[in-house]
Amino acid sequence: MAAHIDILDQKEPLARSFLGSLLLHVSLFAAIVFLTIVRHSTESWGDVNGGGMGSVAVNVVSSIHLPTPTGPTNPVANDTQSHVPEPKPTPKVKPKPKLEADADAIPIKSHKSKKTPKQVAREYTPPNKFREQQKDLPNQLYSSQGQQVNTNLYAMAGAGGVGIGTDSPIGSRFGYYATMIKSKVADKWHTSEVDPRLQSAPEVVVRFTLRRDGSVVPGSAKVVQSSGIGPLDISAQRAILDASPFGPLPAQFEKDEADLELHFILRR
Image (cartoon, rainbow, N blue to C red; front, side, top):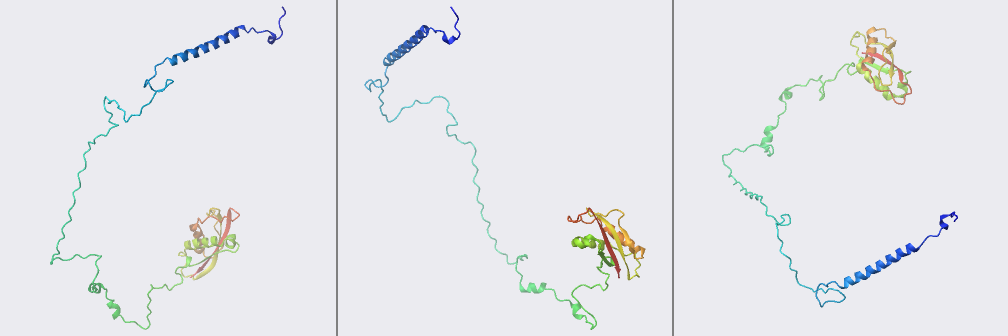
């Protein structure tokens, strides 16, 4: 017998499958019949005359008697009596009886008590008696302010003046920064070592270089125009170094360093 090329072309026997299916259906039918018979033969609960088709009649009652519970009582589910003692009531404080004012008692003075016109007159300070006896001279002046200084050296920075050179970029573009430099240098300019007999002197010009952070480059403070007086030239250089460091250069300034000139003029 020649072998088949494809397994699907072979004939499959169906007798075994048919018998298995028939046996399964017969078993299911028998189980259904058996359960039906057993159900109809069970005992019906309730009234024997009630309902039909195995139903149970229900009667309405006013109350249901429940069995009395036995065993220990659950303390969580029942009210318990607190054993914490109750606080004693606070006794009422009786008001103190008002004392009658003693006729011989001396009253104590208080800062809140109003003063009588006699007390105000007693505390009033009389005018200065010495001023009433003082005689005013016709060539004497009086003022309510303090005595004025009669010299032009008072409050004059460095007993002279400090100015920014015309060729300095700070003075022509950033006036506020130039004013700050002049003010700080003028406060540090002291001419006590200069001959006090000198009433004026030629101006001193000092040139120096400022960094971006406002510090003076070391060795850059040099006298480019001397007054011919050594102590005066040195005092001008010293004023710049003592006033350093200044504030940072303006942010709009293009360079990291600025060359400045200060003019020192002595006037007494």
